[in-house]
Length: 627
Image 1 (tube, one colour):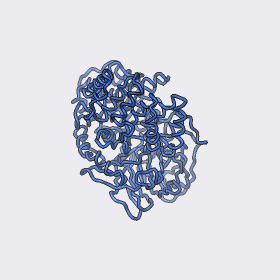
Image 2: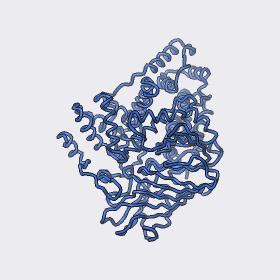
Image 3: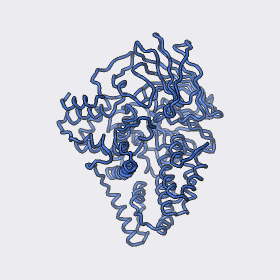
Image 4: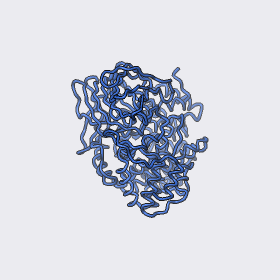
């Protein structure tokens, strides 16, 4: 260990140089237990789960899951209890080993974290079992009625990230704790059940399904979906699940999944999860995608018809290395998941479609980063623009901003500039191999990088690199600048149109979605209502089927009071649950009293179609109460 690295380690006080301890058949490192996770009640230094057997019955009528969860546990010799996270669960019975029924204790309710479940352990305890039922209002579960799906059939999906798994499974809900699992699930006949595990390809007429996940995962990657679904194979290791009414569109945009996977493997080594399938969910899904191992969840809003939005799939695929394989130890270290993943996403897209394509994506990232960074600092939240966060007492969703994603990306791009792409790629492959199926915090990663990238290659580490990028507010001065020739052509087109007043000078036949987005982003504030109207008459933006373009168009329409678009906007808000689109549109509406009234009228109709992740933020934005 270099002297500078050792000093860095001592000052931070967060890294242990102890060797791994082999406890049973599980390789558990001391570092797993030194990362205090303020978002979990679990105390893994006393006892932790290593394997879950989950038996469940899905009840659409009551909107509940009745289940028995059995855990293999690992405990230190003197441990007297194991602590699990729960939230609004009806705990009915707890027992040790096979039939040793015992008393348990549910601690006081914490509004954010739920309740700690304390289960006493005996000297010979090998397993614990919990019989329980979920609440109809479980935050992780969205129960859709037939009218809320494209297939006109009821649907259930989960969203466990960041700390919502505890609302449908009693669990040690920390990204630093991993376990394998098996499951048996009973669903109403006519439905297909899927999990983040080995999955069936066809419906079982009995409604019984079995699952197995042999690679250890953290709780936030637990996933379940139940509905009228079918499967389409796209390659030897890839395929698509979707509702029948959506499948044709899904195939058209996602037919290249196998090429994505093979490209990613060439960059960063073998894929460790055996199968990469994508489930296209109903429109209420709150995110673009969720990287559940073996079963990425995706929003139907990426189905643009021209494959221009499939970079999201590259992003979720990249999580198979950054996040799923090597995981942020706590949600304060979220950038280790997302910054890496954006970097890998753009490298995959560069390999598939060329440098200028990836530079368009990077340019959009830079725009979003500058906007979010400014808002955080202007609102007195400068610390939230650090890569290393402090989320004490707050929902981890607060950290799911452009900082983790885009500042993280540009930091890694800066590292690539300083060390060279070939060295950086070799380092990343080493990093993923060394930390496979483990968790790591920011300080550990920085020390590892100092030693194994800069030190190993005798490259000087810039003095203020970490303090400016990781622990500093806002955007550092030495930010790498994307260079997109295609975006420059868009800017020239805008200038020519506005200078001549002739809208026919806008030649957009070969524009991708990204170029249209840049077009809207570069639109000057001085644009007039008549010009907005002319744009709609020429390009039919109001009736576009592209959700990314629609969002930017509705923002422009609100600013310029172009009410012709308001009917389509209301339809979009009622039928789309992706938080990325909802928040900016509602935020723009509430800037005026008239817009605020319109927003509330729409929200009253739309809220039932949104997942908790979305309506939790929108309730606060709109000061909306269900009481």
